[in-house]
Length: 614
Image (cartoon, rainbow, N blue to C red; front, side, top):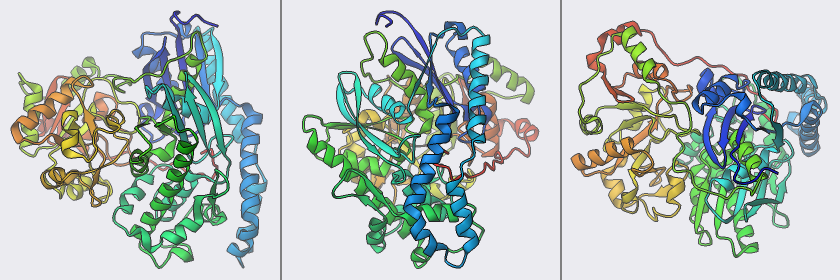
């Protein structure tokens, strides 16, 4: 064992599922984390994270020779991958074969194709995956890495992110997702720096598959657009289809397992390459997409909240809950858990999806070394690459940029926002996780409720997706009911709150139709510049919140570099852009617009996959 006082560098790596990425833990703190998508500009990229590794080592002034441990998420080898895929397909086939005969009916060819897909598993994809691992390892070894390699199971890596970054001495950890490599979801008991698994939820009874399927059926992309279903759900009536949805997905009465109807798997497979105009499955056809979404959301909440309640009753001395896994990107579900009387506080890890896997592997590795790892609370998650001043200078020369002469940059940005201008921020280190938290953010006033229509259209986004606010933390209780409960996790925009009358009346642009909002709380300690902009805006307007939406065009990853930011600034026709300490106004830079004429969002057409691991 390595003594607890000895400095060590751990490189966490993940690319076995979507959202490949890299993280660095030095001694006992997470110091860097970045997803490969921010490097190669492909949303939820599963490419080998070579560029992310390079960026992480550069940012931390490390070389491969300085790395003591390589912590790998889900390094289960060719045979392991093959066995995992085979076991998942067998489990799904056992559940669905009987109903499949009636479901496909006269479409015998479709039934035969389904059975063949479930019974045959190709080893080639596993071998290709392993080859990518071996090439990356070889590269690091050639560059001087001589340390030890350790690997960690998928669900355990999620649990490590949730526990070790929560600051809780003890808590229950719920990992809810579509699938890892051995199960669908899991629950852990965390105390004294240790994680103990107390529940495995087997495939195919998956809460993630429940939500992925309706995402697909309603015309969106599974594993990417589930948030749109949550947005639609607020517009519908859950009672219209609630009983039917519960019959398809619920918590079992006599076991801690979810029931997921075989028809969900059949629908997911049958509609995986849905043709335009194809009707919904018959039981859903009479209903609006809003009512369907509302019923699906209600069934998800009831099942998972029911499971949380059971474990709170079994462990009455534990009143804190830590959450991770892609399902906990669902902020309405997180709100329900946060509202439970038996819960003092929840923590939702900012990288709740698979972008958190390299972080979890690195933290899990650190926890088993030396004196272990005591849970702590990172002050912020600005853990990615930073905007480089030399790049800004190069862009200034190339595009003849005109910068504003600003003696008080936060104050000048606040004035622009008070004048209803749209301002993008790209400064400092990039945020880790799926949410924009002030360093790669678009800001606007919260007073215009029509912004959800026209700004979403300008950014080529779906109009029913509500914008979220950033709010001064000292005004949390003024804006949100019980707003100080779980305030730390609200700093990462991972939980909803019911809005106060003050919020509804004065800042309607960020209040959803159901009276909730998904705020980011900000303190000066977290991000001085971002806080100062908001504080000065409050001085001008009396309002403590601004619209905060991610700085990217639709289907693009959040911007990373100054070049990314400049392209998105022009493509989305924003009014102003902050690049580190420089302020750029659209109207002062006609040459920029001329030279970047024709800039548009990235065209991405990644293939959908029916494999649980994907």
